Amino acid sequence: MDLLSPEGLRIDGRRPTELRNIQTNMGLLQSADGSAYYEQGNTKVLAAVYGPREGAMRSKMHHDKAIINCEYSMATFSTGERKVRSKGDRRSVEISLIIRQVFESTVLVNLFPRSQIDIYVQILQADGGTRCAAINAASLALIDAGIPMKDFAVACAAGCVDGTPIVDLNYREDSSYQSPDMPIAILPKSNKITMLQMDQKLHLDTFEKVLQCAVDGCHQIYDIMVTKVKERTEELVTSRGVLQV
Amino acid sequence: MFRSLCLVPNQSCWVVYIDAVVLGSSGNLFDSISMAMRCALYDTKIPKVTVLQGDTPGDFELELSEDPEETISIPLLHVPICVSLSMIGEHFIIDPSLEEESCIGTRLSFAVNQAGNICAIQKGFGSVTPKQLKGMLKTAQILGRIIIEKLDSALELESEYQEKVGFFS
Image (cartoon, rainbow over all chains, first blue to last red):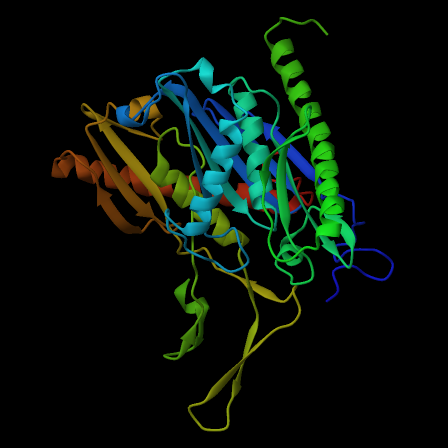
């Protein structure tokens, strides 16, 4: 099955630079300080944030900044085939580390010495781009928790088929031998890259094009996220009577 | 319910995996999870299977229907839900909130089905007298039937409503 048809359409009918449909929702969980639900196509992710709060383990605390803990887990029913995953499963540990590193450089941790911020991400349905969706959901959850950050952390993946860069790969595309998979995360205002990974082979000449494609995808997602945050803020502020609309 | 999952007696049957993920808890998890499972079972569609005789007498071949519309659903008549009764002092309550749960003396969970049969009992910490137990059993049977009725009618209403707009949106 070719990932790109001769007419330039992908297997789900999208154009190469077209993202999947994105839906978001914030503030769903009462028990968490911040929470967000993020959906990109068929990938559905729920993120919950607790903190900044007193560190559970004294030995791990830093005297001048907060530590960030991250846990990424996939539900047994999230993939096509039911798969029971243990907590220390290698892929989950890797992605938890990646998300932690992204937010360690984005959250203003110096404002909260000797505390910890916990980010829990649960993948409810996986159809490619779960680590990117996890980062986006975590960004929104951190904003919902009111934790100060330098900027949004926005993630998107890109690949390329026969030299044509494609953005936002679904499961069939990123597991296919026809296209490499390059998820990245950026801070949109400064265009700084906070995460960069790549699978399979990619020629150096095409690298720049694919990277730019991913960055453009990130900016599109950023616009959607900012609109959502502004909507939510307006809701909150009107419901408290601070702003009369 | 189990007989409907049998394909060839003593040889093959369907296996049903039920996985629940708790996204948020504010008390009464047992009951909520059992009700969610009943809803998930209501929604389950199993492809129709035709059993064909193989070459040798004891040999069977299973043919799965290609049509996605040709499905059978799991009969819920005997599927129980959990009704938990928690004792605070001399009285018992149902559906405790998180704060109420921290005050309870004992919790007894009863699995009750539509016919009013008690399918399982599980006792948490604490103790109950036999007389209290009898009272709780009767209450659980009555409540179980009411809750199942309401749940089933809500599910029927939900299945008529065609438009599904994403998970939490």
